[in-house]
Length: 280
Image (cartoon, rainbow, N blue to C red):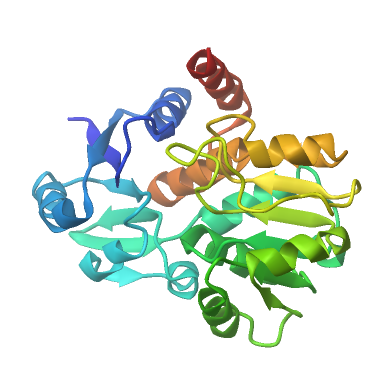
C-alpha cells in the first residue's frame, strides 16, 4: 500500500506542495501519495486525530498552523524549537516529530545569488514563523547584521531576543522606520503575506529609498511577481520570488522522510509551467 503524505493548512487549495512532492516521488521511484488536508483553526485538533488514525507517514504544515501544531506533536527538534514553528512532521513508530526546513530552504535559495552571506547587511520584514526560521538560518550562516521590521515591533524584539544570543547586530524597527533606512541594506527579505490573495496588489512598505545594488526576495511565489518585487525591479534592484525557497524546503522535507535529497532542477521547470498557467 502506498504511503500517505500531505499538507495541512488553511487555505491549501492552491498549494504547490502536492505537485512538487508527486514529482519527487516519481523521480525517486517511491510508491506514495500526497494530499491536501484543509483545516481551519478550530478544526486542527480533529483533523490531526484523523491523520493519526490513517497512519500518515509525514506531512507539511502551512499557515496558520505552523505554531499551533506544536502542542499536538510528540517532539520537536532544535530548528523548530528555536524558530517556534514547524513546517514538516516526520511520523515514525507512532511518534510525530516536528522540524522546520524553511530556514535551510531559504539559505539554499539565497546561495543561488549570494556568495558571502556573512558580509551582507540584511533586513527582514515580518516576524512570523517563516521570518524566525530565516533569521535563525542567517545567524547559523554567520550573518553579522540582521535588522527586523514589523508592524508590531514587540514581536520582532521577542524574536531577536530569543534567537540572537549576541551572534549578530540586530535593530528592531517599525515598518515606517525601515522605509527610511532601506538604502543601507544589501539584502531585503519580505516574509509577510502582504502581496498574495487576499492582500494581492499591496506591498508592506514603500521601496523609494532602496539601493539599486540590493537583492530583494519576497517569499511569496504566487503571484510570480508581487507589487513589492515589481517596485524593487523598477528601482534597479535584483529580485527573486519565493519559488526557489519553496522547492528547496520541500526537498529538505523529503530528505527528512526518506533520507536523501531529490534533484529540484527538473521539478523547478515543471512547477514554473504550472505557475505560468495559473497566471493566464
